[in-house]
Image 1 (cartoon, helix red, strand yellow):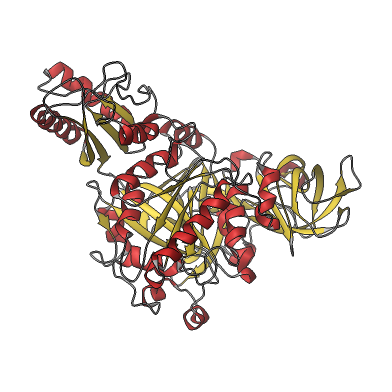
Image 2 (image 1 turned 30 degrees about the vertical axis):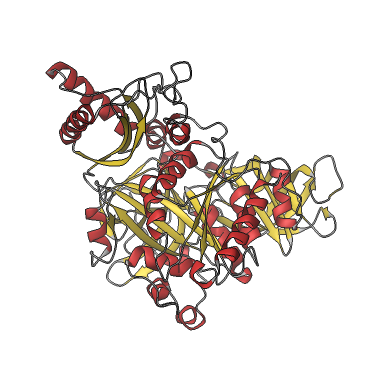
Length: 607
């Protein structure tokens, strides 16, 4: 895939070839509930009644958060307790969310239930959910013809746990797209609960600087939150005054990372994609301009960093139906070409939104496409349904493994807050961070690590005592000297004995370069939250590289050492030159060589 991403950066455009068509066919490689949603779309009336060709879903998986149940009519007490234990397992696998398919056998056969049996089964499911502290929401119902004169239905139900101790499910969505495509306006409408007036009123609350308000263009990274309660209802600023109230009322939180669309702020956009570790990306395309400006480049960045993305076509109220269709076809053509190899899924109904959300998480090839207006509100509800059902990419087991590791917090933002002191914002990559914990931060310009203490933690603007791996938060460091900190540092457990380096090797693919890439060439390297200029020291086995070629390259940071890990994704750029790869080797400088900073200056806290 890496070499083909260059087409998106370099501007090549080839015919789509024999790719899949729009909404036709099931997702290649779709599993669990994803393929099932498609199967149901085709099931039932057309061929379901034939005994030799009954409609099927994929067999039930032991892992994952999708459970098949034929019926749940008046179970015994022992059976009920077993069902409750099973529900706890499915909720744990889905990090607080599970999907139940009622009327489906374990092998995936769509049998269906009569009206009375379905009512009794849903009543039992509701009792089970109450027992584990969860709510249920019926996502959709389907009629199936299965050798019966009585109408039979299958029902898909979302079970969501009511969060305790702020442990709501949090998904991060990076918002990409060309300048003036309507990114900030769409976020304003989703998070504020009020439609735009057509002149950008909805986006004003998102801007952080005066010049952004004056120009209407985002130049910095801002965060907005959209919540869903345990019943699947939207929780935003329309019925909550503060972020704390939204957090308290929500079982699931979508954190939007609003990135800049203008080309001159590209380094900020790349930093947002590499540093904030988004789970998904939302590419916003204006219906009236189509694929213009940085759209293709942002699409290439999401693919290079392997961030699953969906597409929103905005401003449909400004265009004729034919113009919108032309933009959709233009996107489908690009998504199907060999550089992307995606399967577009145009979402036009609630049913499509449910199918898209399940298949999107199951198969990396699926790309849902929404068409909406932030002024008229057309199809906005479809995006909300999609975000409500969208499952996390990691399961509870992977989350537990990360939490067992030593603490590592990436420093992305640094602030000074009156009466609080120095505050850092970022993401906890691994481990658990508690209020009052002692950590070390670095590397400094001379490669040292400094001791500090976490005084307090805030997550989504509300106080939090414990931070778990994968969560983003701000940490107050009290009187620690802000001038000793910079973006790209890490705060780690003192037991980790962190390794840092100035020289490292990476296997790269040169996506685009006007001439030849040689020793001595300087590029800006992005690795996670690290962003620094590096010089090419050596290209192994070659004298030079051209567009599309692969090689192992030795880089040296020109300013100060950084904390890197082998296997970390790398992206570099310089003007039109762009490349991607991963770190393969480090020439490490250990803290034993460097020494932990013992001479604590004013404001630095010892253990």
